[in-house]
Image 1 (cartoon, rainbow, N blue to C red):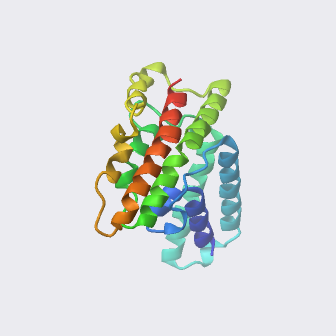
Image 2: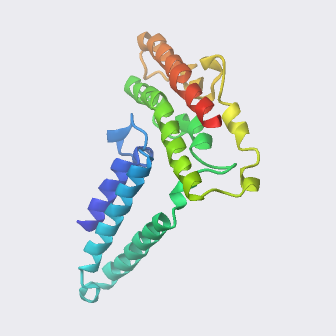
Image 3: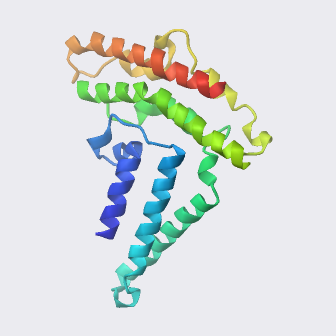
Length: 212
């Protein structure tokens, strides 16, 4: 029950991870990365640890005792990471949401028209996703939780490459240039228009605001 509760919480709060492990309930959503969301997550981790510690590990079978110790270690690390505010430094010049997002089409199913609609919904949510990262990192600036400048050298380059004049030039538009046979041809134009609008109105502005 404890493991199941933690797993469900992880799926709900990280829709991209849920998609990755084959749970399609959140395929149109992006994670909430606001400071408030991180506080809620830390509170849940503390509650899970408290529940775990109520269990008498000495009474567990050997395999479950191993699970107990591993799970305890995982929770303690997550709690410590939040305590030391590592979440306020979510990117560097080689990794982060700004680098992984353009590869979204490689990480989600794109077989049916519904899959494409979910993909486009996530494109449409990017502006808010970028703003949440801005909010998070501004808290980091206020608290002095920032990376050394040398680590951020060149960080603007992947941002600039995603600020395109034509949505069709975006890497995120590539899946719309050729559809699988499982998507009805009658849906092609509709999906292309919707994707172009999402890139124009959400993805590009999101990258532009984050760059600024």
